[in-house]
Length: 213
Ligand code: B12
Image (tube, rainbow, N blue to C red; front, side):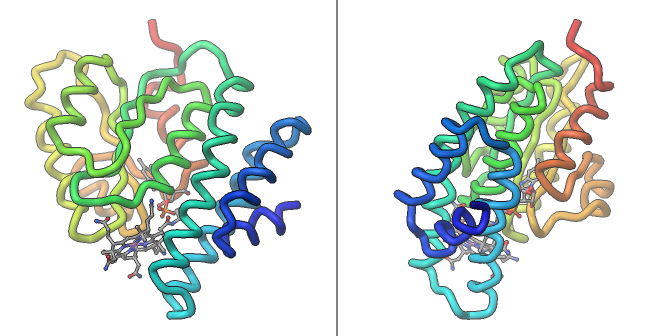
């Protein structure tokens, strides 16, 4: 079944990806495994084929669309199954100038499944918008994704802006995305996780693994 999911994304077949996702949900299957071993494995393969020059932009976009079709079904189901008291609030988005949102959406999904209240701002999100939503939301964590080396500096700008928000308990910054590294995060004073599963553990560490008062 995971092979079929992977294939649906690699072939860019959104209708099939959606049907397979619906099957896991209605059959009470393991949603996280479907994401990790199935659909996300597919999009990683699409990435490899693109880098090898086997795939071009249309195949890439179709693969991304198939992945999103599956996630649209899996995300609400994950939230329903894992409804529990909040571990903390997260405002997440892909930084300004960057439209890559597959990894960010995976991180958002797993954070919600892991018990966080997540507000997903989408992609191409400005520094001001991150700060504004984090302030209004009383966010514990601002999580930002950057997939382009040219958009990584926006993560730094957010890191520099957080202390100027004038909050007694400012949000912590969590950064990620393929070109980011732990040393980049260290340099800008943020936390880092290399994938969506690790992001949950790191976020738990940032909020002290405790519930909000
Ligand atoms: C799919 C894709 C696209 C799709 C995006 C569709 C979408 N809606 O997201 C489309 C076709 C639109 C696209 C466009 C472009 N792309 Co593109 N794209 C990719 C590709 C193949 C896969 C990205 C992906 O989705 N990976 C799968 C997900 C699951 O992985 P991920 O994003 O890395 O996320 C994981 C971790 O990084 C982490 N993570 C991610 N975010 C966060 C956030 C936090 C807080 C944390 C803790 C962790 C975390 O957890 C995730 C899950 O485990 C990559 C190649 C690659 N190998 O990364 C190129 C790539 C990122 N793209 C690239 C480029 C150049 C572009 C374009 C400029 C191409 C062009 N000439 O038009 C445009 C830019 C558009 C823009 N302004 O953003 C380059 C970037 C080069 C660079 N060094 O900057 C790459 C690396 C390809 C390459 N080798 O050249 N792209």
